[in-house]
Picture 1 (tube, rainbow over the protein chains, first blue to last red):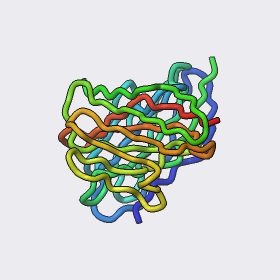
Picture 2: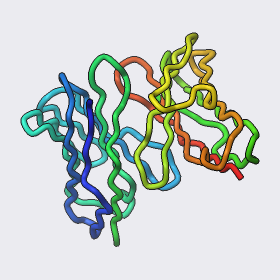
Picture 3: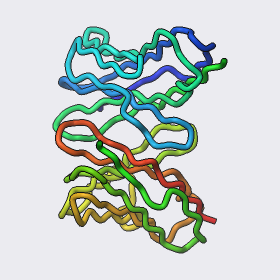
Length: 112
Length: 114
């Protein structure tokens, strides 16, 4: 079945460091890919998405490119801030359903 | 836009009682809503898909008689945890699907069963 694998956290960075959170997927067909962010004590918020190969989603300085050849969707940010500290979930929506399949989440902690 | 609310945000109940959680899409209509359960430091587990005007579709291993889902209108779905026990304590999150393929999530409900 379809699945999403994320790098295990926590990821601890200093402010202004470069961020990469890896995400790989297994799916039949051509899934849509998403990154969601969950700030402490809050629900998930859509951060960005990409619906086909080579699409780049971007929002709030974060970017992720849909890489079909490596079945990956890594999340990147050039310069993280303390306020970016949160849990980041990679997810896919595939097939004929609207179900989202989530990775296990990666905790990012940014220190001043 | 695309705001989803949940009520209550936190609830504490005694073992054996039932608890109802509401999920509302505030500024859009959603024929489909989803209910998830999130365990501490873990990912979201889809419990069921709720379609307006029809019975919910439950994921394998989820007890439909214990987790009652009603989707009576295009903006409201409810999850009732019946005869709750401490092992039902968790963070319950709903999401709503307007047109397209993007789900919008509620802020979650923390259930604690004593």
